[in-house]
Image 1 (spheres, rainbow, N blue to C red):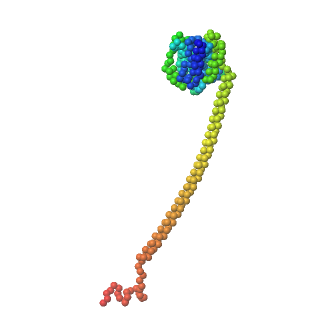
Image 2: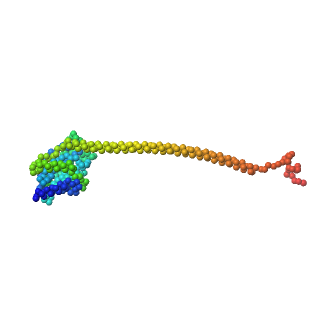
Image 3: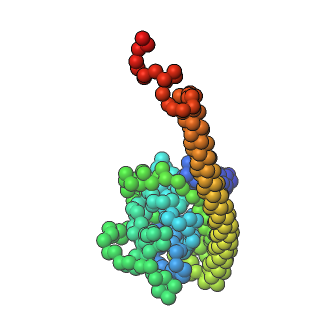
Length: 340
């Protein structure tokens, strides 16, 4: 009966962990009455690919007990996101499992010291800068032949605890204000590769605490370089295809702009020709107006001359007739004299 109950709890927990819709709203995925073993001490493998982020190992639970999921280098689901590790918390007489998630900030993970930058609060093993991940080589091991974006920062708190859970008998840390703010960020569930990695560990008997007594055979997963290179090449091919498509779109845009510029040039030439025609028409109209004005002026001048002539003719004295023999008065009288 007890084993059946464990199985029901496990199925419910895994359903919550695997559900991408519930990962942010429901963080508790599993609860059992036996606490997990201590965090084992192990060596971190070198980061094999620029941009991968370390996800520390942790104890998971199945119907056969606790098993260790090795730490691994993982490609983040999106640029700028960091990993908040899962953790166990003891409360109300049971140990509850809180699933990990990706987000823009590292949230609360129980104060557990997972090492390699996860000292119990925050993450100091690396940081995002300008869309590129930089590695703090004071706590992170990188392959310098493939990873060149690094820095050194030794200013971080030291934690020597190996407790694997939060609560009585383990770590007593509480969320900080920064942790509480990070809890309201947009979160992304563990990637499909992470879930496959956990399933693989659950199928390896040597990873179970009942077999290895808290000392797992594989504490950290050494990267499958060939698989990572295949994935990286696929991502590069996708990026090249995207760039090729973008270049084709830019070429089409340039051709469209060229055609538009040609049309604008044609329109400008047409406008220039129309303006020239308008200027010619204006000049013709001006010349016609000048000729019309000159004709009007000549007509008016002629009319004025004719009117003057007519006026002079109408006011000229009438011609007088004189008797022959002189220009005196008739009958030989004295001019101006009086008749006697």
